[in-house]
Length: 147
Image 1 (cartoon, rainbow, N blue to C red):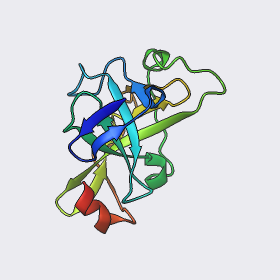
Image 2 (spheres, rainbow, N blue to C red; image 1 turned 90 degrees about the vertical axis):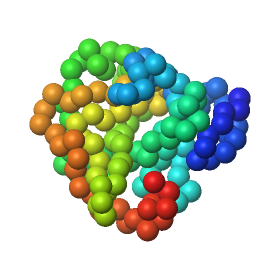
Image 3 (cartoon, rainbow, N blue to C red; image 1 turned 90 degrees about the horizontal axis):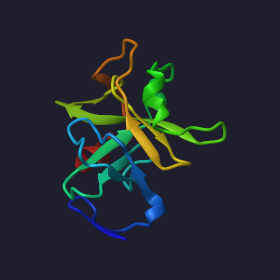
C-alpha cells in the first residue's frame, strides 16, 4: 500500500504496519488509520503519520526515556479498546513539541499502543500530569531541523 506524506514523500507500507485508532487523536478524531515511522534523525523520536492526511506527522517519544518515574493512571474503559492480553507488547508514546528554544512533551494525554494487535488510543490520564513537561533531547540539533 502506498501513502503520501509531505514530510517523507511517497511511502510504501504494509497493511500489517497500519495502526487503528478507534477514536483517532484529539483534534483528528475522524482519522483512524496511522503508521508509526522510525526517525532517521534520532533514535529518541518516531513519527505518527496519518494515512489520510499527508501533512499530518506528529513527533512522538517514549516518555519514560525522559521522565523515568513517569507512571500514568487511566480509566479501565479507555484500555478496553486495546484488547490487551498478557503477552501483548504495549507502549506509551507522548507527543513532542518545541516551545521557544525548549522541547516539551505532553504527559497528560499520551497514546497507548498495543503493537501486537496494531491498536492505539489517546487517553487523558486521571492523575496529575503536566500538559507541557520540559525535556532535554540528546539529538536536539538534528531534531530542530526535523520538527
